[in-house]
Length: 93
Image (cartoon, rainbow, N blue to C red; front, side):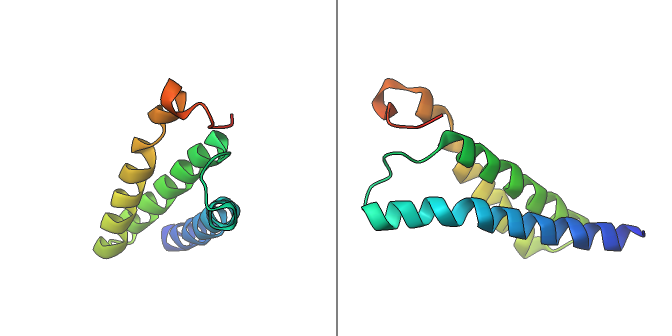
């Protein structure tokens, strides 16, 4: 398997995983009109999959996708430490 094929497969897997992780959480927030009960494990997985997408977009030299994923990862990862604080005791582990 050549490098381009590995990059494409990685990108597709990253896309599927990211959507499968993010959609149920987003739906729950939309349905309940509250972010109480959002899973911290799911949020970590979202960051991992965003990192995979970041690597894929760097590998194929897609600057737009790279910076979009960089900003997504930065925003998502900045929320992680807050779940350990007493202000957000509602985060589920």
